[in-house]
Amino acid sequence: MSQQQNKSHSIKRKLVNNISAVISVILFTIFLTVDISVDTWVEDQFNQSLTNKANYLKTLVEDDNGNVEFDFAGEFMSEYEHTQASEFYQLWHGEAIFERSDSLDLFPGANLPFLDMPINESKIIDIELPNGHDGRALISHFIAQKGDKSTTGLDVFNRMTLAIAAPTDELNKVLIIIDVVFILTCIFGVFGVRYLVTRIVNKGLFPLNNLNEQIKILDITGVAQTIESDIKVEELEPIRNELNKFITVNQKLYSSEKRLTNDIAHELKTPIAELISLSEVALRYPNDKRISDTYTSDVLNISQRMKIIVNNLLLLQRSSSSAIELNKQNIILKHLTKQVIEELAFKHLNISERITNMLNDKLTIFADEFSLNTILCNLIDNALFYGITDQAITIDATESEHSVTISISNKIDRPLSDEELSAIFDPLYQLDSSRTNNQRHGLGLSIVLSLCNLNGFKVNAQNNKSNTLTFNLTLPIK
Image 1 (cartoon, rainbow, N blue to C red):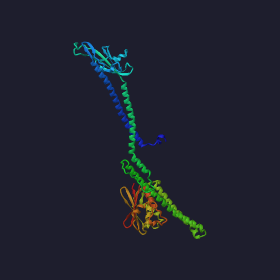
Image 2: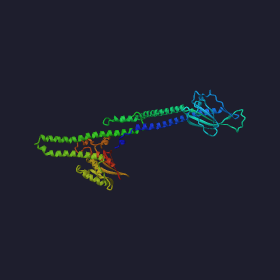
Image 3: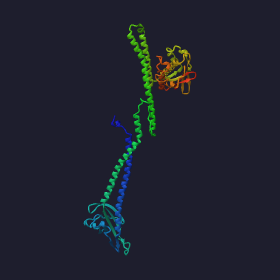
Image 4: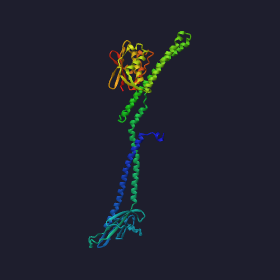
């Protein structure tokens, strides 16, 4: 067997893993979307800042009768002064450099990138700043606005190109911080989700664990026990009910088996005690002819009684365990009943006079002959033994569309109580009238019930009028 087949599966572990995975994927998707949105918003804000500064510088460029003027005041935008040297701008008139920021003058050989593009177009690109840092530049191509006193025609205009650049160090730091916060939040979120899911699953599985603990302490060998719960759980109630049924059935079976074992011991104890007594007497008085003449026959009779008990117990066990092979065939009931009566003639000499067979000559059943023979033999023998000697025993049948019910009725001294009727099919159960008879062992009706269950027959006993006990055996026609 492979290692994977040997590995046990855990409902709790599977639930925790699956729920944690689903929620973690949802959280990761949300966090990733938020992270991308925040990164995009921060970059947009940075680009918008460049655009706003570029638009402001454009307003400072003026066309005064063909002369371009740039009215820049450093005190308002100190980031372009020498002391900062972190942001830069450069202005072109046509393709000639027109103006440079003071911060750019610190790097005489450095220029911001110039791009040829349509008028009123702008573009943002990543560059390396003159000071060697990473940065971002906005390049815009525009027309210098004419002054209020300008007299030049509208068809004359001055092409200008503006490039401004700012470092992206702080932007990258912010983006890194956002990413780190996202990763840490995602990690802690996954662990937090797993912890919460574990707690929730443990709480949800508490009734199941409680049911398991109750099952552990069950003992069917003691007093009757069932699994009870103060909290009714809809999914567990069917399981609990079925377990209680199973427990109840097994308690009854254990009790029945215990009683049966005890009864078997008592049944065998009597003939064994007789054998021991006979042997002890024979050993003590070896010359007593009264003992020696009957010793052999007495031992044989006791042994035959023990053999009958053992054979009946074996038959009961075989019929209860489905060890008997069924060979179904068409059987004429009246012929089979006559055969049973002939088999019982050695035990009941006046059986022919006592039994009234009212079965139809053509009534046919499709069943196992051995099972049906054994059942009828035990039922008729029981009726002959318990029935009043001078009263007739009636065998009759009632047909319906799908079944036939055979009724075997006999007169008795008194009606049986409900307790006796319910216990009459129990193994080794005997009525008071048969306890003193060495030939009655209380196994016949138990064998009848086992064979009926094996063949799908139904049998019951009931009191009828005038102290009549009737056994009803219901057989399917096909």
